[in-house]
Image (cartoon, rainbow, N blue to C red):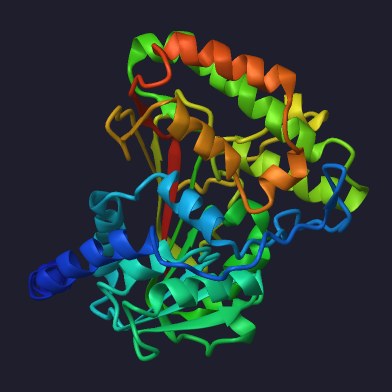
Length: 374
């Protein structure tokens, strides 16, 4: 059966190859240029600190065209080979490519890719403005029969969609922000038997060339710490609980995610570039001890790869500054403008990188979890 599924999968890939190439080309052009909404950022911050003391500290909103254009263009471009790992894993257990979910869709990049393989995609996000951004950016590519939209959390996905209705649930950069056990129960409810969960998290941009990793990465990491310190310090107790859950989860490389054996099978944990730093922030920024936990099961498969070409970016200092300016929606409003210490580190990094216009290679630490619904 596995051989038959793989054969059918590869035939499906061939039949859809022209569509995928066309969509990938159009998606790359349109997602980086389409205007979403035209009002300003929305952020519940005052003096750099959020007013909303809730555990979900990622509830800031952005519906500004400039933000989303900068955000999309300064994030890693998930490679086709990365997605192929997800599709091939799914094909071993199922021949159905009917419905997929993109949980925490943001601007909709993952939803667009999934739509090249699945008949219908549901893009969901816990921020209503982000759902609207994704819809407006994807509408020129896909009509309502191809992509629909849901405003909900990952933990609440099963309250909005029928049980056993989906073939794949994909969640990028989301698992550390949610109650993982509740999220997995929700995903398991929505997935069909044989359906696939694919969830991943990438961390800090990492200098790919060894010489620049040695002399530049410590400076970049210090810039990262100082930026996040300004966002995190002074938060209320509820928000700090959410920050700690996220910090512990990132430091574990998603090993904290527990897959009950009576619900999930063929669990695979794939990690790239573990010499890099996956957490965006740790003890230096948070002011408390980080306590990673592991819930890796005895039958789960672990793969570790070091790949300097993984999601390769070529950035100069202007590109790197753009990345930092849009770390997440509302980031610039949270930290304010004009920090002498951060500015001084950027000047030092500019010189160490070889000057303003010098292009350097960047890769990414990343972990991908794949699991099959029993």
